[in-house]
Image 1 (tube, rainbow, N blue to C red):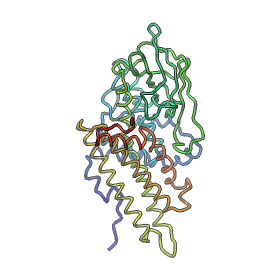
Image 2: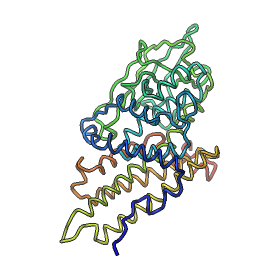
Image 3: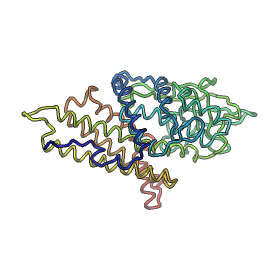
Image 4: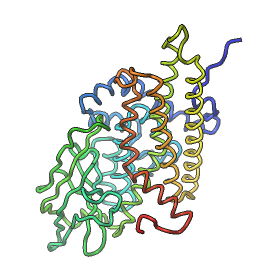
Length: 392
């Protein structure tokens, strides 16, 4: 009797935990990634480029951009469906999921949650189609984990606002049509919709990256950028604004990172079945099978946790520390898994002929952005003890 080969998800019967609509959405995105992303992404990574504007329009046609938001041309999909889309996108490359996360969970979310009705009508429908690309300016060169220390300032000048400062590690910065920029004001932390063709605004491309090479990363510089009064997001004047958006992005990451892990596991299994050493495929050896088993069990546990957090989110019950638990778990396990997969591929694992080391390199950035692994550790610690150890 022939053995039935299980996929990582099949081994846990993940499909039985999903609705028909979620399965359909996952299938559509997986097909897009297989046909549109995977054949070319190694070349984009090697050259340090990505056809982001072209891909944004294609992703817009799929309904992925801002898919978890309601109205204004957005699909209003459930949290789990959005998470599964992020997982499939990151199975292609972390840079593709980052493009979607920044557009939908950061830039669009900020406007959707804190913008005026006029701002929503003006920007969101065209952002949902990919016609307009956005970026999100929060992190500064000297203030990553502590956004409260930001130095970017906005001051009133008559009816206008004038912005000065800089933002760092901004995905899509050089190709964005608008930037949602957070700045310190006399009224608190405010968000501003900044057209990137505004006088005094510039974006400087970050070169020499060893991670997220199929993604555009920029520094934003604001030198006396003058904006009209209606450029400010009216519904928030504190760090609650950007932190709300970051929680949305972290949620996508806790699913997305597992896409990189799954793609690496599947690649390592295929390789192990084909690669022969000492007259046997290396997948036949006990040490290799132990690696497969360890990785798939950790992947399955992390995915089930992600689905649980997604269901809590759909019920309106999820708490920020639970999203931190999800990111903490998923990214750590994904990084460990990709490193183990690289060991199975041996020397071949360091080439772009296989996706594993590309995923591993990308995950080094995912481990850091939207809250470093250390910060999420301390968020969990604070939830357990009531002590903010990062302030001690």
